[in-house]
Length: 169
Length: 454
Image 1 (cartoon, rainbow over the protein chains, first blue to last red):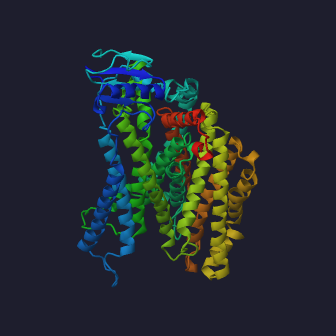
Image 2: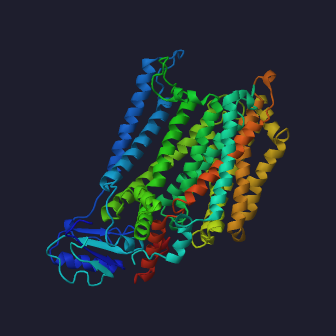
Image 3: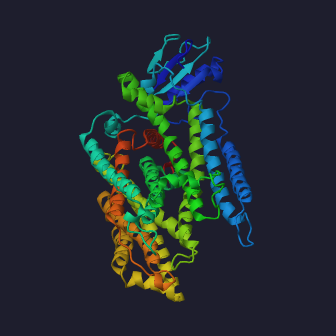
């Protein structure tokens, strides 16, 4: 975070970053006041003690698929019935051919919903956000931890390769 | 470091983006000129009408539909292969995925042009879009051509997003470096825009990984559906050697086969041209070579099954097409196809010495030619010999069709040249993650199983 009131520290190793997070937890700093950033996914290897992050992407993909499939089948059904072609006694909306369109609609709905959910959960796009103090180090592979709390213990970032003082940005 | 950024290794990868490579610029210009040939030829056809093409009764589908099927097949190189490798957690996928996914997007873009070119009057394309036109008509959803549009539209949308999602963290890496060095530069601003504000928080990584996994699962059946539906353009008719129950899987296998072929050629050229030996190493070529052997066998099996069934049935109109291929006008190209698609791949790639970068690229190039021939034989071979014998005809492409064919390859290469200069052709964060996992496994006091480091 680049807002005033955040303390940043860059760590070279995940174990050092995790050590810092444990010190913060011991000092009673809530997970909501800590932000961990990295250039690769570290999963639960380096994360603040407290509620774990979660994602609703799979659920939203299923809902998006259902929605897309429903729209597709409605498109086929309603348009075919609105302008019925002479089919020589065969059904106006044959299920096998409607099934092809429905499948593609289902897949498209799931894809679009998946991407929309990823963007929503990631709070993207966020253009115009100024750079943080250690973004360059982040790009080179460091782990950056930012803390917003007045209870930050003095030695929490003892193993950091660099720190930025509070309200320095 | 969490993901030890091997700067020397990454420098080779980022050089085309951060610096100026005359070779790449020259390549872009040359291939751009070839792409211009496509648009010149197409423009000539639009001005003078479709009659300037060689297609005529009864061969209404010539080079254009051959190219359409070929390029849609090539598009199976990327997203499908990448998704399969991701779903199966194959560690060696990491340097391969992005160059494969880019192939998909560019090949689909080009493949999607051919129905427009074939229309003759491309401005009437909107008749296919499902909304009431001035005559109150709706598209006929029973038509495989409408299925094509839906399937290709879905696959293209999915493939573009599947390429762009994993690109966000890499764009953020480029942004952070550029902002630290030259914050006012155009590239810094471009990377800032393309990164969309990606920061690499725990939540962002968790959501992105979930999104990529879900997309990988969705995109596999979509890719299979695309080429199945393309095959149904043919097999839903009663034309000889088209009306086949195995055409769907036959086309899908052929698509993946040609896709791996173009991937091998692209990877070899990237390795040589950009010095990416550390990423696209011998192990990657060996593994892809093994996959190639498997698809050689599967494609050969399908081809044999298709022809043996027709031969055993001995239905006269089917046999006319059969003999045309085996010992008639197209025998030379048919047996040439068997040579480059079956004999040479098996002779070279079955052995470890053959699964080296240069050899696999040469074999891959041969398979590309072979698969184009296969598409041509399917499209033109059957249309020349329809069931009603009095309509038997011939086909030879005009310079317009040849220009568009050559131009399509130029356009594909140009798009690839441009992409390499704009984004890392190997996913930085995925390779770093792989290095991190390998480092953790090596440092682990627990015995590391083969599964853990796979």
